[in-house]
Length: 369
Image 1 (spheres, rainbow, N blue to C red):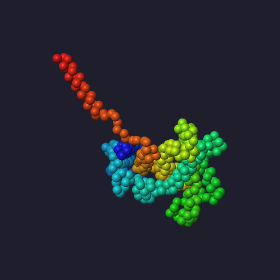
Image 2: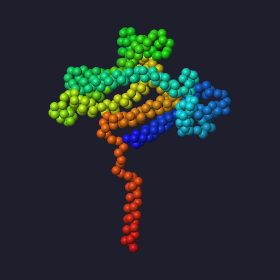
Image 3: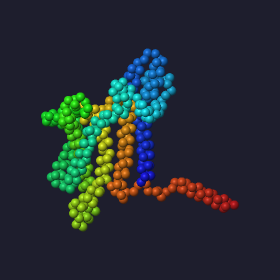
Image 4: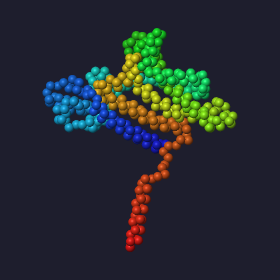
């Protein structure tokens, strides 16, 4: 098991490196160049522009001036090398922010990202926990009452909210919330507005966006759990258990829960990444300064370092979550075994090939003599 985890971590790091190289090259080629719009790009003399360009290469930016570019023997791979080097810079990890406004407000890229991530987490964590618990319970209840009125009602709820886009659902919730006395925007803790309105209004302002994210996620969890429960209940081993006289509760804990747990873990654990990455629609409607706002603002400005930091963070989170899911399989079902020794040894096969070749050559030589 330990060797399997080490192999998976090695492949995860390799996957992360491949994605970094691929995305960096694409963004460097096609994205807007923020250095060209910065004050340093508006220099008078050719020498000043040349020196500024050399400095911009250190921060992975190049001006689109072909005359100056021909004098700089740098390319995208060199810029990629500077970026990888800047990841481990203790003063400015992951490079520099080219926008003066962002630099003065946040200083470094991790600060620029993790402050909005805290705001996003206030929405995501409660929504994820509530939607996962309610979704699983509703799915189990619907699966056990397949074809009944309750099942039809839950199915209607699922189909309705899966089909309803969030950009339509969110304004409806805002309108209803205003009528009920809820704020039409989120009050972030620590701000002057939050201190003025008090803790009660802060909590009320977070309820509508959490509700939208919860219901949107709840529909998917409910549908998936229901299908898994129906699959297990119609299986042969459950029918045999019923014929042996096992009770409904015993069958649920011994067969149903055990067999739906692995598919549910496969769905639930990675799903938080999608929620954590933020929803631009939710953040726009409630004026939330979250993670999706960071990446949406970075792309038009060509802030390649900010884009790459977002990519590295969420990709690393995703690939190591997959490893966590694989490890959880063994915890949920100890019969699953990983990293068993292969019956084939490639080195031994190559060695035997040359041994056979030498024997055949010796026999041919003996016959010829």
